[in-house]
Length: 307
Image 1 (cartoon, rainbow, N blue to C red):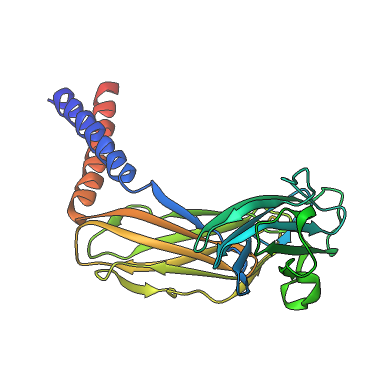
Image 2 (cartoon, one colour):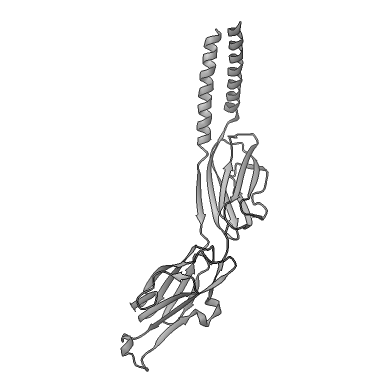
């Protein structure tokens, strides 16, 4: 009699073990997004055109690159529009034309909008703490004559030069930046029991992560027993980590979404979205009982086999 019962116990143990793995797998894959924090748009407006430009970042590491996006909106008909991007040495910009300018539009119709992107290269030999300037210059003409045909009285020119206004001068700062990795451990989530959510934030970069705040977004059916929805502001040093823990409880079963948002003054926003499954408590305890029975039957079987 012991043999068949022991076989039944083994089958039940294997079945419950597979079920446990299925339950855990349902909730281990996160949806992750990173929100790039581009620098503020800059705008200069004349009677002939509007110039907008945006830098992907102005604090960069040695060897990094900056993306500069430029948009020109023509208000009236313009001719021979040219734009120059002039970074301080040794920074360089890709995309210079034979004329020396970075943009040249022979004609711009009224209400026409054009957009171009450029890469500014930051050499790896630069030192943290150094700063460099990036200047923008643009000009156009309101008549169709070629440059060598323009006369002094009809050479009407509209121009912009960031060197003439400090508000439009952009400063690039060389820094070491953090590189953030986020790990989580939610474990098995059971209805009507206290469950622990753990998030670990790791800084793998070359710079300290400043003003770090972690926000957790729980479904309405979750009750927060311990921990804060928005953590206290801290710094995370290089090769260091911080672990946050929340205690939660819910009276509902089913599939839910738990969100986590990472904020820092010198890192892009990181948003994670996790699908979690809340299970009734009784299958888990049946699983434990099954294990206990299996162990008991195995011990009894072994002891009888010996005698």
